[in-house]
Image (tube, rainbow, N blue to C red; front, side, top):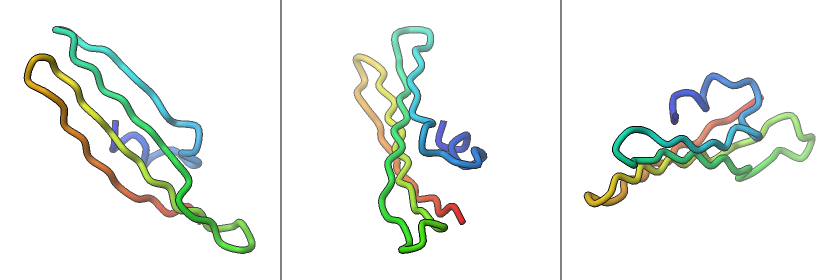
Length: 67
């Protein structure tokens, strides 16, 4: 899900959640972190969380600049 967020032209609306076998879920959140004064460049934070009971949770984050 993290890689997918890097292929979208504008990732701002690409938050998603999916459930897989054996009750594990993957959730992607996308948020705008900063924007240039002219609005042409935006930096998004992309966060992906994998939850697999009973083992726990794993999260990773990345930044993406869109010009």
